[in-house]
Image 1 (cartoon, one colour):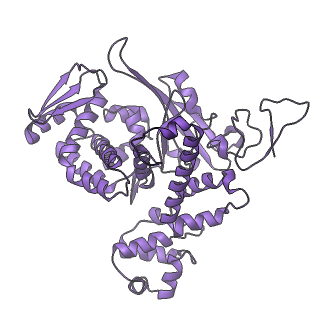
Image 2: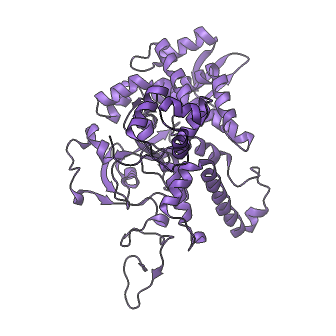
Length: 471
């Protein structure tokens, strides 16, 4: 068992509240004193190995959940925030931020939202026309950003919905994956829905359901994995409307638009989980060395669908490799991001230009590999590829995306992509960052802006690639 100290005050308090027991009762079950439980809940004492064993035995928890630092994503957000010059001279240290994220997570979430509002307020003041416009959102955080944060802090895994999809997959005989024919037949038999694959009048239409005629039109131009996904999403919206509604209603959204968008996200989550049922998909991934092409072939899925699904393999007692996953458009904007690994994507800026994902557009059809090290000394294996999605002919709309999927180097030996790579040699790893504004590397030739935490000096009579030096 790891020797690092595990502080789990918030998790222990949430567990006690979930089971509606007092500190005294919890202490009795764990065979410790009430004051000891109080100290643990206030992060004054770490969990010991014997207490972890007792929690596993008493409440059915698993060691991964207790040992894993589930505050990584919040801590990364807080460190990025306090790097702003706004906090110069008063920024709390790392230990204070860890205490904030573990002991008072609600306050930490509030600080993140407050800082996001501050940044957007400054952006609006910089453009008076935008500030004067009658914006429909009525707030600083957009509905899409609210939903993004909901999935982000849920570890991109929703247990009730995932298990419901797995149950239905068994009923549908999805072994190993779904077929278009079976989904069409099930929709007709159970829901009296007739499916038509059509050439749509509007090229960007994916699916359209007519409640009166009970007909579902699906764009015939979609690739088979996308058609299956659309059928699965329609089925999820019908069969899981209550569960999806309950999950969305329980989220602390500030707008009805966010709730509506969340329902779409939850429906899509169900579709992916139905297309790639958890246990069958995880077993196949382990057996195939997480080979993306093989998994895509076996489950009739796209590489994007496989990469996204791999980032959700966080079921307690049945976890897969903790992956991070992101999608970027041609401008380098991160349009989708999830991370079950320590690496957390920049919240307020673009991705590091040294990541191999930016080269993926030049190598369509190939999976690129990169061994990389972040400024905190952690090492990762990055995979990157790009896809082009067409709807229609020569003048039809085209979407181009690049994707990155990766894990810590300690997990890389489980991947087929690492079998011929040197995972130990320091010189094999590229020095990368998260984003320029929070990266402290002093000699990066790709730096676009100085780090917020450091000053700069412009040398007289000397010009380098980067026209300033970082103090």
